Image (cartoon, rainbow, N blue to C red; front, side):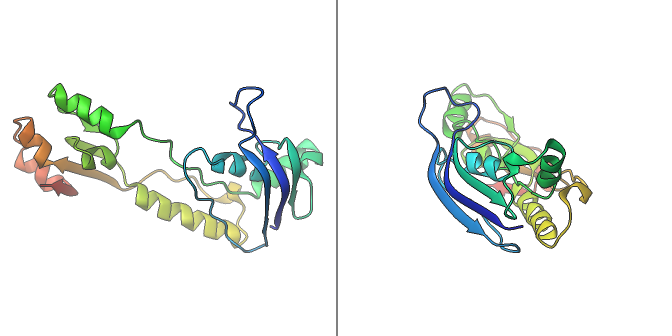
Length: 192
């Protein structure tokens, strides 16, 4: 699918009225078969751009053409068909300020298990949750299939299959805890 954007101006749906657009004057061209990654700091408008490209958010100004068609002039059924040809790999929601959370829990001497390894790397005791790098690799496989012509609706939904148990022994010692050897033996990673 060829994507053409010219002079795009868009605002996230949750933005307050009167606030300046998150995107102004954006232009890009992606030819059929090319891949696109949108990378940038938080608040740069990446998610807003992806929502516009996925026909989930109508821009305030500018043009969006998907295979030369203006998706906002299509009949509802044709628009749904167009959306079915587009794959949007969303970003993970931002984590709360990890260091602040971990510091408060350690100050209260509360042993805590987190859903993501980043908290343990910051000083949390343990985490058990999906392996996000593995999930991102799987998302890349989906993108590849779609770029090779598969319809997103025909690709089965997958749940995470790899979960990691991370244990921070430095934090355990600071809290005066002894982690059983059976837990350490099952851990995918032990921070010492």
